[in-house]
Amino acid sequence: MNIRGFFIKIIQLSAYWPLLFLFRIFFNFKVKGTDNLEKAGTSFILAANHVSYLDPVSVCIAIPFRLKYIPLFYMASDYFYRVLFFYRFIGGIRARMGRDLELSSRPLIEKLDQGERVVIFPEGGINRGGLKRRPHRGISYVAAKSNKLILPLKIESNLDGAVSVLGGSIIDLLTGKHWIKMIFGKPFKIDETIGKIPESLSELRKASEDVFKRIEMTK
Image (cartoon, rainbow, N blue to C red; front, side):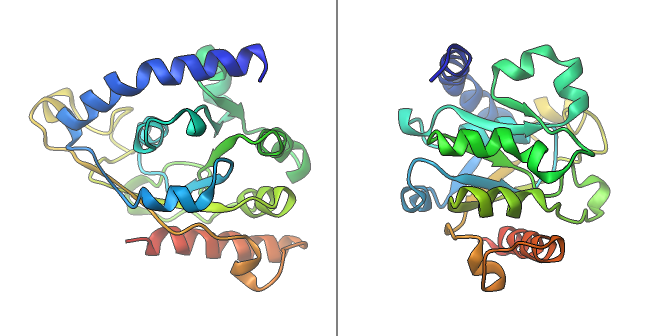
């Protein structure tokens, strides 16, 4: 692990309990299905739906406090990675939107090859106002090239990413009107989606759509 990775691990470990405490108070934060983590091993792709700007934090504290699961690396939008300099020190990896799959996926594949864990939101952005976004090909490409298990994580919440950065007013937060529930599903390999390892762009698209369906069907 390099120096940057070491600092990311220290930061995530240090912030874990304070954030979990706050989320349980303000969001009635609950987690289900953590037994599926053991089936995924220590290096995997965590695929989750995206409902608010708080999702990266929710994902981090949904995973049990174990050294083998920390740090988590996640794909961050080019805008936030550029504007919020600290993103690179809390596990963010620049998405490089608009570039080819090989270039944008390379950093994530390298992390997985090193035995790390990466978080990918297949939709590529927040699901605003209930409008569904088509899953991107990146999740299936990274899974195909890394040969790692995909761990689906369904985020259920009444937060609305279209309202504000926090998904609601400060008053709503203080009165406990919001809630978040994280549900881990059973891990699977990418070839279980379309019956083979996806190669063409159309196969990658179909595989990604199946990955997202598995996230939505997680209970």
